[in-house]
Length: 269
Image (cartoon, rainbow, N blue to C red):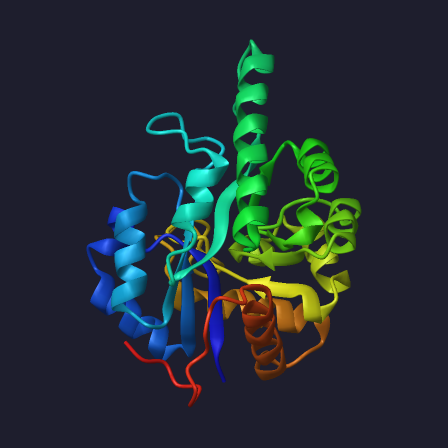
């Protein structure tokens, strides 16, 4: 059995400072591959180096919608950075209105312009998008639909929206990724979505170091714990862990076509 943590932040200090042990625990829990996701350009070189050093770690490039400092890349620059052989996606990108304060309009315009640049970059680079959305589902989906994101596809990461949003994402070829949130007791709406998403369009992730699944909720998350999320999803769907793991691993490599599975199927460091 193999699992893929399709979204984590191994470069963040709480994980990077203990990386050898974290990777060993991931291997012990059959987490064979990981996607380390960028949130700004300043830290991107570390992510690219991680992915270059470890053949079972892949990288993305992008600027998180909430990132307020550092350089603002053009779509052309993002597309150029995405040509790195270990970069498999653009993002994470999207819209996040959760903490906005008045005047909201200026913030929303800035986020939407950044999001537009990322969608254009993905189309130029022909690589899928990693989408973050919070308190902004309608605008997120409208921009994906209107700007032609279906051309490259992508994933709704750490999905926390309703079934109507999931259906809109599925309709434009996107995948739905579930994090440790689905294991929480108060997550019934997300559990209901998890039962309905077609297995062939599902991914699993940690979003480490955040959102550790039950029974580790409140602690630092890490890729090894994606197994708990996968077990919860399998139970919700009346499936076996082995079957769900195989399907979500296949889905990962189908979506992120630039990622290469090891020929013998074994993890290599």
